[in-house]
Length: 385
Image (cartoon, rainbow, N blue to C red; front, side):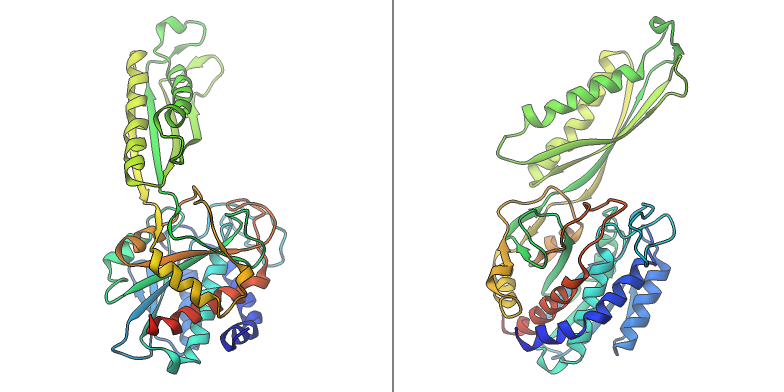
């Protein structure tokens, strides 16, 4: 264990405190006033000068002004889930950090604390970026438009939890190339003509249209996509009707599709709409189909990912670094930064428990120091890249 790892372990009580206090401030979406205020105060206590950037917050630590700049990014937002963990620091409202973003913020604060104390080791600038709106894939682009990547040479971020079964608690997963899928939303409204449930011949039944569409969607991946190119189409919401004996005028569906390439993503986006319109036309109805573009696939730069691995070996034993054999079909808007700059997005095993986006999601706080140490070591090594 090197000096930086030992220093990070010494930060563990602060990391836990930061994580728990941020956990209780859970806020959803792009406007996170309590979370942003908390992070600004803590960054100022560390001697940094945080400033608003679009809907997020950024702080630069300058070691050697003419050196390269590395951006370290954390997401900030929670999910609209009422917490059921029973933890003493559980969020009391209708929002919950059910995806580890509270841990991400704590680990990035920890990296800032380590690097402030080791500024002379920096051969350039480190930019600490805290981003809202990851869960809705609407946070990265406004920050990029506001200048988050101005002067930045490379980017890095992490995700804690159990997205990959092969990662034991505290192990770090890395993967060059595609690591996570695109994340897109689609909606369909089937419109027909309502009628009495006993007189269906007078109706153009949108429930029948929706039922047929659900069946057709199951063949989109199995019959239109190559078997060796992973894709996913899932429906998560369906609404229609108000009474058992009334055929409604319309039915609403909402879902998501995931892909690992732009080609497959475009095909799915086009086909979920075409199939809806085709089903509606077959029954004499109408389908209003909409594709809400989210984040593209997360694609890690191969050379930078290897650089990260070599840096991580200074902090953790080789047995704790795992090259992931397959991507995960979950999405992340870290993808937008990686489209613009070389970098990597790595994964920290968070221990057993409920899955992400669950009301009882939690992770092992004992691994927090590892994320801070990895960020800090990477920042110091970046000067020699």
